[in-house]
Figure 1 (spheres, rainbow, N blue to C red):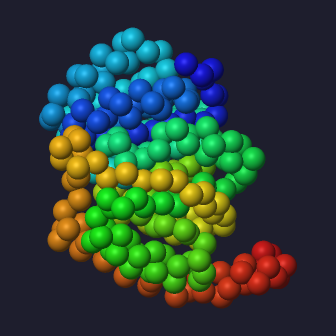
Figure 2 (figure 1 turned 180 degrees about the horizontal axis):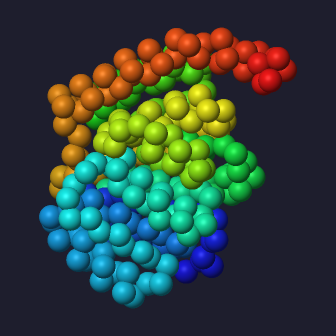
Length: 257
């Protein structure tokens, strides 16, 4: 197991991920410590399985809540504890085997070299990627580019990312949104608005099928409505930020006063 970091940790929100979570956590522990898993009201037995893993691995912490409140809410719970314990950055990743845990050291090194930035995974899709998911994220990415006045955020929905804790915690506790599937795109856009630069790094993404234990909790109607309302809210919030964002884009000194 790697020596535990005092500043950067891996944070994995998890809700009924099936058996894939054990491999995800095991590979993450091969590359980094500490690894925290926030079990968000899972009912599939993985809370107990992860707790057993933690008893045998000092680098793993499992935080369990009895009620499912959403991905963003699980991340916020982890942020609260990480902030209280003095950590400065979290690498968030999914528990279902989609994200490349072997790239954790690469992303952590990029964060250490650019501590003020958010390190965003830019997904590289394989041929098995569902077309509807690929096309849907193109629309979300177009909205995010508009909301940031440029192509700053390589992918608005890919959740393999490192966030500086303090600005993300401040943004999340100031509003009631960002608690479910709206977390990833809104976090990236609002952090950019707050002056946090984005560094995009390519990362392969996998979509395990049901035969391979793949699980998806994305509800196409409900969650697309949630994402649409979020982008409308962000576009409205962009209106009074346009002069400052354009000023930043030009690099003018006057806009930093």
